[in-house]
Length: 358
Image (cartoon, rainbow, N blue to C red):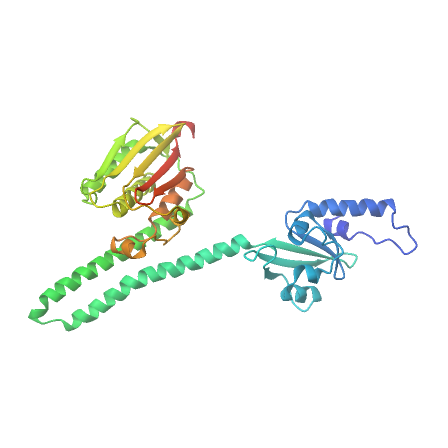
């Protein structure tokens, strides 16, 4: 069986050979079918002219790319340099089809002198790299802010050693303790997020009673003095077993209920309910806060995104709480829904498949 580059290259008809000879026609049909079988855009070139394009390339460049000068189709200096042989490949090019898309272009020589141009969509890799860079930058910023405060107060305390400076020392030490705890919370959340992402493809198999775990979370929050008696737990199902990671599910409960307490109106209740329906365990946490505009809801699970950055930092938020919730839900093959009405409050619903049907 011929290798596919040879099939694409084939044999050009001799000058005195009929152009419509059956073997060459069959070979051209085979080449076209083979090109269309590849998901990435492919262009077959004779010199600088496109002699064939697969379906993906026609979608990208237009239905009439056949017969066109490839430089006019690509319109990119690095692509032109690669085609001219003045640059080694592959090369990264952008702007084809969409300004935000990024491609990697490679050129291969075929047996008969023609060339095959292959374009691989690297947009997802580019987006992932941008997310990684943004994550590092945001994490550095979040850590640098309290660290700068700590250094400043330490330097001040070094000069405040007199007996009359005791009130200043006490106040500054209190602020330093708060900033240190803020850094500790951020580091803990970063480590949690890292562990959850590392395990995201491993489906948990431990059987967890979500009803009992929700009661534990409510008791811990109330016992820690975070709720001020505002958490109202309503349990409909006696048992709701799910396959899960106990520590991660407990963190999910703390994050969702804690968010509702932070951003709900003071003294207004936070309702926590859990029940079962359609072979799922359903956790609902509802607050009576200021609410969130609908256009901002899709961003709530982004790392370090805050609707009100000043208020979030003042309340001790790290900006990672809902990002952790999203990753925990995804690992447990569940669904996270957030609905909010400005002026009325926010409802967070977590749906997890029951263990009996997993």
